Image (cartoon, rainbow, N blue to C red; front, top):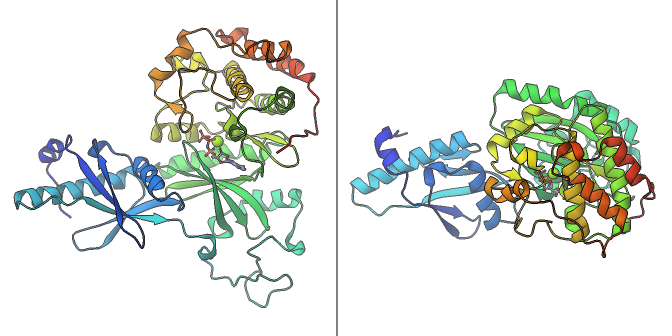
Length: 429
Ligand code: ATP
Ligand code: MG
């Protein structure tokens, strides 16, 4: 491989870069990038995601001078690719040739049927298997494979969670830090939600994250998503949790107040449980409140691993629009900051839009810091009293006090939501 001396590489920094994304069995799409060398791996995956929305792309390849395909899975590998590409551009320039775009080949996740890396024969009929490997059904598990959730938890908590046993099915959604898949766990016959996050970190940090996640095995609350295990493969971590068939609240748009009251009971109980374990949620927002057709509401994506939170923050820059003003200003973070996020989330769910009209959330909740400055500078928004009950308006107003200490303490939150009829919830999904 040709390595470019530092000078010319820097001279190219301001040049436009054209990336040609090859579409499997079809043509290609050209993407003009104005800040080539600053480009992140994640940016490329995002654009590939727009070009190939059906596929789940986790990496891509380019060809070196010998025509060998080289995989790119991280920012480091991106840099190597760009360095190589710019060296070829230099050569083309020197030889007076036309500059060729940078050709990349998206590498999609294999569909579930091709993921059987153990070569197990798939038995699609119920009954004992004729094959040497364990019998697995590709559709729903047969009765003999059904396990109680207690049993399942035991198996999974025993460190038996690994990539080979998981068949990825649909993509449930993309977040700022990763992609969530609906997946089938072969040994237990259980449907799971698996969040896959690409992280370029050292082995040491990987170990630290795994040990920080251990506390999740101990979390036992019906208001917190069940945790089944986590593992690293190459530069990505997979976090396996309970699948919630109703998805997250962000997709429900405007939710009536009487239903919100019931949801609030569950969310406050979930938060109080976490706080009792000295865990701050740090990412309370509608997309982290999940529901199922049993009418349960559970919290997910809480910041149990500082290292994981930090590593994600390093890769995916931006500020969360649900963050409390003190957090946007970079001040200390505490339970009160979770309470703000609770208030703003419920206000959004009640209004059916983000409470600050000047903040347009297009995709996801990460925004440039400057756009969120109004949360710090302006008075908090208030729900229109005529449209909502006085206690509900009061609840939100208290949670969204600018001064953290003026926000309700956990006990007060429990009291103010106690009026709402608790379990079982009868949400119409
Ligand atoms: P962030 O990355 O900041 O948490 P997010 O919550 O929007 O943002 P993800 O956590 O990656 O993104 O989740 C993406 C989507 O996957 C969610 O919006 C939700 O609809 C779905 N999802 C996540 N976890 C589960 C689960 N356990 N069961 C069912 N759907 C889930
Ligand atoms: Mg989430």
